[in-house]
Length: 452
Image: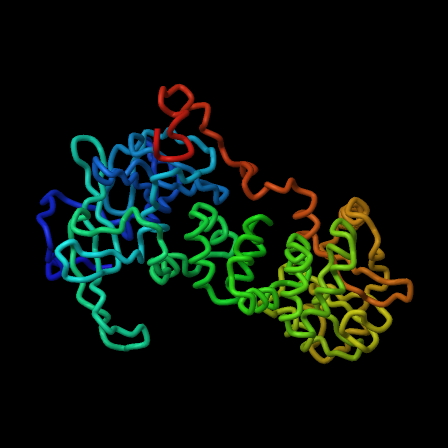
């Protein structure tokens, strides 16, 4: 974002000292004093007080393993173009936002504010910070005026932009009900769903709901599948019923069934009534099984083809974007019908075998007929043991007539074997510097939020 001289129109006098804008700082690399990479800046934590200004108390830092932690500004020794230098001391307890704290990108970006001179309203598009007597403060805002009668569908310019003092506006500490999410979503563009889910975890409940409401159905469904169950439930219940049903349709049936199983029975049934019949049928099929059985773990949407299908067509099917790598590793071959529950299960074809054969070859001639399987009532422990014993990425679930009911992938098993809070727990293999910071007198107060 360019903040050229023609934008420097102010309502009140602001400091002439150099400022750093949040949109430019987010994504900057963080280094320790000897030049080793520590992490990446993801947000700024601002303490908003009635008296005392808007102090920047720390940064939300993404360290290896996608973990987001708090780094106090007292650890920052310098900020320059594209990089931040620190003392090297970082506590790796996960960041938790505290009362009176606002996130520059997560909470203030897109916020609608009133201009104190009475000239109207504006939306915040960036935030300027600078250092004063050793502390960092937010005292400039890059805003865009809201023109009276403006329609979001208009292709004309939305309003003039300007830099104003943070004291020249009201509404910074108000509830975020007047806030949009377009600019914040733009900063999340291109993120893997798991990374976006982690980013949403640092937002307040209300802001997370706003961002979720602004995502399209498929993107939201992908992100929901990566969130802890309580966050999934909160987001789903915060959506209008029709939108919630659309999101459920976009989720994998097994994930949708798990989510509905966590809702009150009446609410789950009401949402299922709004889901398209075909998708609802798949979900209902999974809801009859206990969560920790093969039936509760399986998905009903693997790649299922007939034995006469040529190799070229099978390869096209496993290229589908909606398939996980595990599900794309195998083609399941059955007699008609090819929708679950299928006709008689014949075997599987490994994608590596498909790559070695001519495109016109019928996949029925390439079958691995010795593939292991389980029945729908098999407990989680047995499923895990079979996957491990045969080094399998996927496992077919068959009924007593050898019809394919669904497929269990190794990632679904891991989700259920790991502790419920595994997404929040310490990332495996990430170096923990918390013992280093324990020697600092104030670290206990500063480690998870910005307010001592």
